[in-house]
Length: 197
Image 1 (cartoon, rainbow, N blue to C red):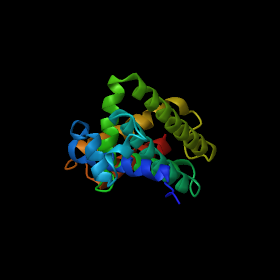
Image 2: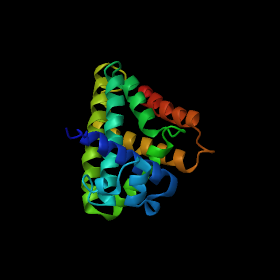
Image 3: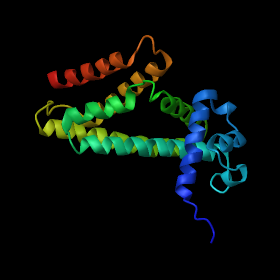
Protein backbone atom coordinates (compact mmCIF):
# COMPACT_ATOMS: atom_id res chain seq x y z
CA UNK A 1 0.00 0.00 0.00
CA UNK A 2 1.51 3.39 -0.99
CA UNK A 3 2.58 5.68 1.80
CA UNK A 4 0.20 8.60 2.38
CA UNK A 5 1.92 11.97 2.35
CA UNK A 6 0.56 14.98 4.19
CA UNK A 7 1.38 17.59 1.56
CA UNK A 8 0.61 20.58 3.76
CA UNK A 9 2.87 19.21 6.49
CA UNK A 10 5.64 18.85 3.89
CA UNK A 11 5.18 22.45 2.77
CA UNK A 12 5.38 23.61 6.39
CA UNK A 13 8.59 21.61 6.96
CA UNK A 14 10.21 23.22 3.95
CA UNK A 15 8.95 26.69 4.90
CA UNK A 16 10.21 26.39 8.47
CA UNK A 17 13.57 25.08 7.24
CA UNK A 18 13.85 28.09 4.92
CA UNK A 19 13.01 30.43 7.79
CA UNK A 20 15.75 28.95 9.98
CA UNK A 21 18.30 29.28 7.18
CA UNK A 22 17.27 32.85 6.37
CA UNK A 23 17.63 33.76 10.04
CA UNK A 24 21.14 32.28 10.10
CA UNK A 25 22.49 33.27 6.67
CA UNK A 26 20.13 35.75 5.00
CA UNK A 27 18.33 34.98 1.74
CA UNK A 28 21.57 35.10 -0.27
CA UNK A 29 22.95 32.18 1.70
CA UNK A 30 19.87 30.00 1.19
CA UNK A 31 19.80 27.42 -1.59
CA UNK A 32 17.08 24.94 -2.44
CA UNK A 33 19.48 22.10 -1.69
CA UNK A 34 20.28 23.57 1.74
CA UNK A 35 16.56 23.95 2.50
CA UNK A 36 15.91 20.30 1.65
CA UNK A 37 18.81 19.20 3.87
CA UNK A 38 17.65 21.44 6.74
CA UNK A 39 14.12 20.00 6.44
CA UNK A 40 15.45 16.43 6.37
CA UNK A 41 13.58 15.80 3.11
CA UNK A 42 14.72 14.98 -0.40
CA UNK A 43 15.92 17.70 -2.77
CA UNK A 44 13.67 16.38 -5.52
CA UNK A 45 10.55 16.48 -3.34
CA UNK A 46 11.07 20.20 -2.68
CA UNK A 47 10.26 20.96 -6.32
CA UNK A 48 6.92 19.18 -6.01
CA UNK A 49 5.86 22.11 -3.81
CA UNK A 50 7.93 25.15 -4.79
CA UNK A 51 9.20 26.33 -8.16
CA UNK A 52 11.85 28.66 -6.82
CA UNK A 53 13.45 30.23 -3.76
CA UNK A 54 11.10 33.21 -4.16
CA UNK A 55 8.09 30.89 -4.15
CA UNK A 56 9.41 29.26 -0.98
CA UNK A 57 9.99 32.64 0.72
CA UNK A 58 6.45 33.68 -0.15
CA UNK A 59 5.06 30.53 1.44
CA UNK A 60 7.27 30.96 4.52
CA UNK A 61 5.89 34.46 5.07
CA UNK A 62 2.32 33.27 4.59
CA UNK A 63 3.02 30.54 7.16
CA UNK A 64 4.37 33.15 9.62
CA UNK A 65 1.29 35.29 9.07
CA UNK A 66 -1.01 32.33 9.60
CA UNK A 67 0.64 31.50 12.93
CA UNK A 68 0.34 35.12 14.03
CA UNK A 69 -3.31 35.28 12.99
CA UNK A 70 -4.03 32.22 15.12
CA UNK A 71 -2.39 33.86 18.15
CA UNK A 72 -4.17 37.17 17.58
CA UNK A 73 -7.53 35.44 17.19
CA UNK A 74 -7.02 33.69 20.53
CA UNK A 75 -6.66 36.88 22.55
CA UNK A 76 -9.10 39.01 20.58
CA UNK A 77 -11.69 36.40 21.52
CA UNK A 78 -10.89 37.20 25.19
CA UNK A 79 -10.28 40.96 25.04
CA UNK A 80 -11.58 43.94 23.12
CA UNK A 81 -10.72 47.56 22.43
CA UNK A 82 -7.36 48.91 23.57
CA UNK A 83 -6.48 45.80 25.59
CA UNK A 84 -6.83 43.62 22.51
CA UNK A 85 -4.94 46.21 20.46
CA UNK A 86 -2.10 46.19 22.98
CA UNK A 87 -1.82 42.41 22.67
CA UNK A 88 -1.87 42.66 18.89
CA UNK A 89 0.84 45.34 18.77
CA UNK A 90 3.06 43.52 21.25
CA UNK A 91 2.74 40.33 19.21
CA UNK A 92 3.58 42.24 16.04
CA UNK A 93 6.34 44.47 17.33
CA UNK A 94 8.26 43.00 20.23
CA UNK A 95 11.48 41.32 19.23
CA UNK A 96 12.86 38.77 21.68
CA UNK A 97 14.75 35.50 21.32
CA UNK A 98 11.67 33.58 20.21
CA UNK A 99 10.58 36.15 17.61
CA UNK A 100 13.97 37.25 16.26
CA UNK A 101 14.03 34.66 13.47
CA UNK A 102 10.50 35.58 12.40
CA UNK A 103 11.41 39.25 12.26
CA UNK A 104 14.51 38.49 10.18
CA UNK A 105 12.39 36.54 7.69
CA UNK A 106 9.83 39.38 7.61
CA UNK A 107 12.53 41.99 6.84
CA UNK A 108 13.94 39.72 4.13
CA UNK A 109 10.45 39.58 2.65
CA UNK A 110 10.14 43.38 2.81
CA UNK A 111 13.39 43.73 0.87
CA UNK A 112 11.79 41.65 -1.90
CA UNK A 113 8.60 43.74 -1.64
CA UNK A 114 10.59 46.86 -2.54
CA UNK A 115 11.94 45.22 -5.71
CA UNK A 116 9.35 42.75 -7.00
CA UNK A 117 5.71 43.61 -7.87
CA UNK A 118 4.50 40.08 -7.08
CA UNK A 119 5.89 40.36 -3.55
CA UNK A 120 4.44 43.87 -3.28
CA UNK A 121 0.97 42.54 -4.14
CA UNK A 122 1.15 39.88 -1.41
CA UNK A 123 2.44 42.45 1.08
CA UNK A 124 -0.39 44.86 0.25
CA UNK A 125 -2.93 42.06 0.80
CA UNK A 126 -1.42 41.18 4.19
CA UNK A 127 -1.18 44.78 5.37
CA UNK A 128 -4.72 45.50 4.25
CA UNK A 129 -6.00 42.75 6.55
CA UNK A 130 -3.79 43.95 9.40
CA UNK A 131 -4.98 47.55 9.07
CA UNK A 132 -8.61 46.40 9.00
CA UNK A 133 -8.07 44.55 12.29
CA UNK A 134 -6.48 47.64 13.88
CA UNK A 135 -9.35 49.84 12.64
CA UNK A 136 -11.87 47.41 14.09
CA UNK A 137 -10.19 47.41 17.52
CA UNK A 138 -9.97 51.21 17.54
CA UNK A 139 -13.67 51.37 16.66
CA UNK A 140 -14.41 48.97 19.54
CA UNK A 141 -12.37 51.17 21.88
CA UNK A 142 -14.29 54.23 20.72
CA UNK A 143 -17.62 52.47 21.25
CA UNK A 144 -16.52 51.51 24.79
CA UNK A 145 -15.56 55.10 25.57
CA UNK A 146 -11.85 54.31 25.89
CA UNK A 147 -10.85 56.87 23.26
CA UNK A 148 -12.40 60.06 21.93
CA UNK A 149 -15.13 59.88 19.32
CA UNK A 150 -13.29 62.69 17.53
CA UNK A 151 -10.42 60.35 16.66
CA UNK A 152 -9.93 59.72 12.93
CA UNK A 153 -9.86 55.92 13.06
CA UNK A 154 -8.58 55.56 9.49
CA UNK A 155 -5.54 57.80 10.04
CA UNK A 156 -4.89 56.47 13.53
CA UNK A 157 -4.87 52.87 12.31
CA UNK A 158 -2.17 53.78 9.79
CA UNK A 159 -0.20 55.64 12.48
CA UNK A 160 -0.45 52.70 14.92
CA UNK A 161 0.73 50.28 12.24
CA UNK A 162 3.66 52.50 11.25
CA UNK A 163 4.63 52.99 14.90
CA UNK A 164 4.56 49.30 15.83
CA UNK A 165 6.43 48.36 12.64
CA UNK A 166 9.13 50.86 13.53
CA UNK A 167 9.40 49.57 17.08
CA UNK A 168 9.80 46.02 15.80
CA UNK A 169 12.40 46.86 13.18
CA UNK A 170 14.47 48.92 15.62
CA UNK A 171 14.13 46.19 18.23
CA UNK A 172 15.67 43.76 15.74
CA UNK A 173 18.43 46.11 14.55
CA UNK A 174 19.30 47.68 17.92
CA UNK A 175 18.49 45.13 20.64
CA UNK A 176 20.76 46.82 23.19
CA UNK A 177 18.90 50.13 22.87
CA UNK A 178 15.43 48.57 22.61
CA UNK A 179 15.21 45.46 24.79
CA UNK A 180 11.78 43.74 24.88
CA UNK A 181 10.60 45.48 28.06
CA UNK A 182 11.40 48.90 26.56
CA UNK A 183 9.60 48.01 23.31
CA UNK A 184 6.51 47.11 25.36
CA UNK A 185 6.74 50.37 27.28
CA UNK A 186 6.82 52.32 24.00
CA UNK A 187 3.64 50.57 22.88
CA UNK A 188 1.74 51.01 26.15
CA UNK A 189 2.78 54.68 26.31
CA UNK A 190 1.41 55.23 22.82
CA UNK A 191 -1.91 53.65 23.76
CA UNK A 192 -2.06 55.63 27.01
CA UNK A 193 -1.81 58.82 24.94
CA UNK A 194 -4.80 57.65 22.91
CA UNK A 195 -6.74 57.20 26.13
CA UNK A 196 -5.72 60.64 27.34
CA UNK A 197 -6.78 62.15 24.05
